[in-house]
Length: 333
Length: 251
Image 1 (cartoon, rainbow over the protein chains, first blue to last red):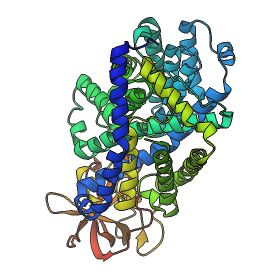
Image 2 (image 1 turned 180 degrees about the horizontal axis):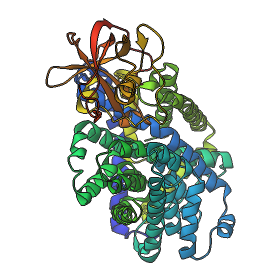
Image 3 (image 1 turned 30 degrees about the horizontal axis):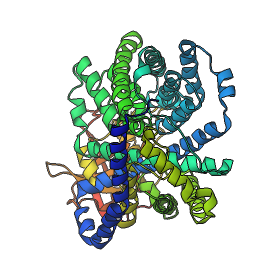
Image 4 (image 1 turned 180 degrees about the vertical axis):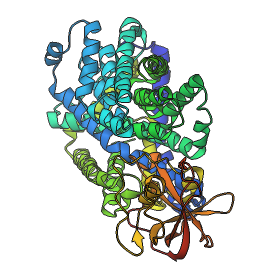
């Protein structure tokens, strides 16, 4: 990782320190205002739309937190237990070979997309090539057994939908991994680089890591949940049915919808199935794009790997996921 | 965000998760069984808060000013590219975590109701895998809205004909002045909810979101095939009684 130019670095550092110093009193002031104005705010929140928004917002946060905490605990374990030596033995040397192996590892490890982000970050911290770790990030939430079973339940009598989902999502994970191995090297990516206080025990390091990762990512999850709840409340689902006529338009609309409503991969099959007016390829697109890239994942990734990374990785994944769904849908559905 | 605020935040979020499960209100947001993962997660967060708090209060040797001074000096020297270096620095977004806490502890967002239901059509119903058993005994016979819809759409023998049926749900309206006994169901959490409605005829509409028990007879559609999928089935009300909202709001 390159060192920032001295002057620019200093300005940014001092700017950030300034913001950091103002943070606590500012927000505490806000909290005091909230408590003092509680009645006013409760009145304001009485609107039916605002109520529905807050229910969905709290629901998304509450639903995702156990997965995020589980992912962070597991990521901390990977950092603490898996040494570079063990990983080097398990992961093939050549990145091109390691990418599909990482894809298959995703099948074995049922994870939610929120949990996969910290795990990926800690794999990279352990010296796994970013392309390989990112393949795991895309595969784990998309093709694990829980997701495939829920897809089979949501589309009874259509086993080809389960097959298509598996093939399309795996193609996205491996395809993006290879693209990243080929071209992704120059993209700036924030690394975990830890300095521990002298004399820290393993337990202290572990809890430090867990707390740090959790507080870093959970805020982005909340941000994603705010956006997703807003869309859920504002965009009527009948709008979705009105585009069902055209294959290409419906595929694009479903891709965008998957990005902004940000469902968990365990649930998206039921939503896709409920939009039964749509062509099967559009339903497939919804299920392939969602676990690979959505607004809460993109914000989580920006928080974990840095905004420049997310600005490149999210559009790339989005495009590859649409292409993969179109090809697989045309082939299998 | 300094350590003390971090401890406060972890405590509040942990307490939030534990509290909604203990009060039983988590069923407004997620599936009932998800209470167990929520309790475990809440407990983990509380433990993490305690561990952090003990170390904040602990001997300065472990977390002393020396270490922080070293960080500052390093950053001033231009090494700030290593983000996530200092465990006390968090992005501004972390403060957003206070929002769900504030919402739940002040307004306690209610279960989804008529606002959602009036924006969504009744969800289509998959054809049951098995032939429907004849309608159970009872007068009136209590059915869920989902069961009622299944019998209305898929029961070849129309065994609901002439039977008195009891349904429970909340009131939602449409633009044409009809009202519906409505239930919301979840796939996973409240963000992916879907609704099922039963149109209620021959009774004045109670206020929106009132929970009611309707006893009445199924309104058999004139032509049975093709089966009307997107049209909610109807019930001719014999009685409409206001009831307490159920503890578990979703069907």
